[in-house]
Length: 127
Image 1: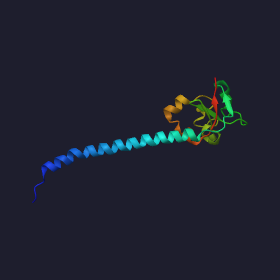
Image 2 (image 1 turned 60 degrees about the vertical axis):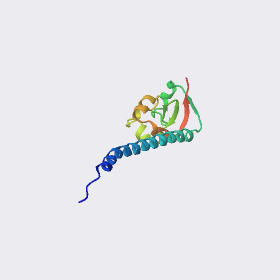
Image 3 (image 1 turned 30 degrees about the horizontal axis):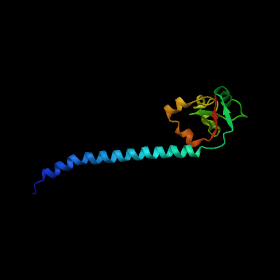
């Protein structure tokens, strides 16, 4: 029976975790880069008509209680029309608490990127 070369085995044992660490770092960098690129795409994609320029006080009127008005929410100063997601943002729906106001703090906490991807920017918040 051949004797295992312990020197070579020890090198493999030492290098294997470094290999996994390298793969993890590269994968993480790829995720970060793709996230940055995705956000840049979203920002570019979202440049649409800015028909609404509302104060936070005026934004309260766009909470879904008036069927003639769209359902809007503010996120990082932009107004998003979430009317197509009425089953989520309409009165009594799960995320109704986000509409008709600046929801930046909550959306940053729970992951507001979906708003940027799914819904159009229709204006901005003014003072």
